[in-house]
Image (cartoon, rainbow, N blue to C red; front, side, top):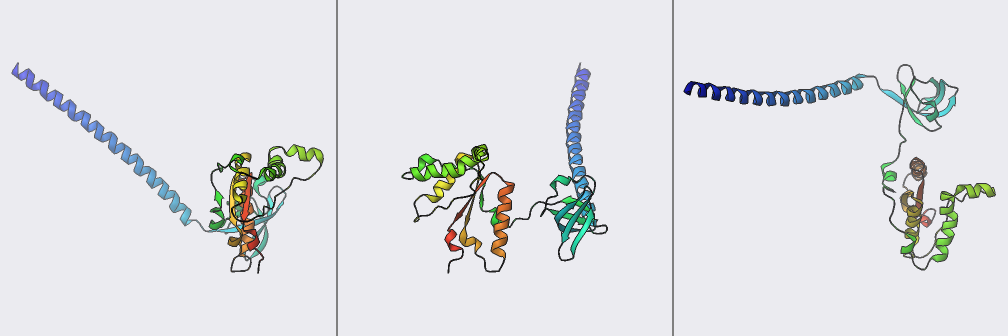
Length: 240
């Protein structure tokens, strides 16, 4: 009996060691798979780094189904081939693209270049302001609903009348009269992105910087359409 008990305990102990060893093996296999994934990613990054650099260009005009006119600064304009797999419908005027350094073949599309200061102007979530929060501006609320909200929600009404939709309104008045709150309420009720910019931010020290920021501001607004652009302190532009 004593011998049976000894061997039974010995077998149970070895079973426990096997289970522990299997657990360690599974853990090591998981670590191995993780390291293999890292090595694979590093090899891909290394391969990309070893490739020759590409030129960055800007689409001027699409020339048929396989050619496009691209402007490369500061070298000039070139008619280049389009690589397979590129969606030609996305090659609009002004689109940033990359060209292979050896063949000048258009091989990829780039996102729009937006100044970080412009990106910070956009409020990510839709404002929670409503018309009920605004007092004493019933007539102004009615007018802005007809001009902005109606055009966004029911554009077919303007088309049936044969008139162009209004693109914006000018809100004026002393500070604290509800101009910003009214603009935020419009963005809330139309479910639009709200982009706020101060006119003083567009007045830059260097010539051309302000106009570039305005262009990038509207590019960003189109990419996040529908959106409401609220330009505060607009009187600071052009003032003496």
